[in-house]
Length: 202
Image 1 (cartoon, one colour):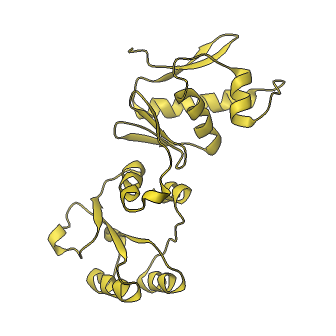
Image 2 (spheres, rainbow, N blue to C red; image 1 turned 90 degrees about the vertical axis):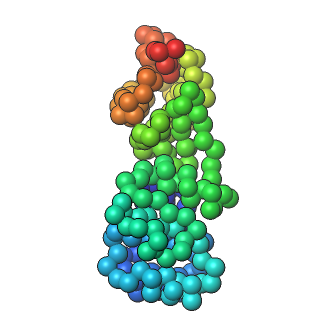
């Protein structure tokens, strides 16, 4: 969850009350996210201290299912575990809209090229930067046959085709990511020509 946030926001990760307050004192932060089940100190007192250090601080709580909202400090937003990184980033985008990147979609398959997150319905898979760029090439041209030369140029910025094993490996991992989502989407091989992203159910 937190690695995905680092792709989209500047994140300071702290483990305790004193460390959190010291970080706020050292640098202005736009939002404080508290993973409530993980803390081992008085939450209400901590939130009072946050407001004292930075009046008007935006507070976001991650709650456990057994925590009652009425017992929680007042916050601008909250989510209840279990949550996915995509759900969290989507909710944060409402509070920090200037940080949001374009989400590319086709028939429900979504790619956030900033967070490197590939999603379908409630499932998600996180990609490497090159895998995300490869996925973007396919999602922007669904059903279209993409040659190996085109993919090498778009993803790696080269027209060298002497060794395309890197492309083969990235196609393999992208297929695994698509399969993990449980959706109908597949990268189809057209022998001797290239690949295309398809939805066999259509």
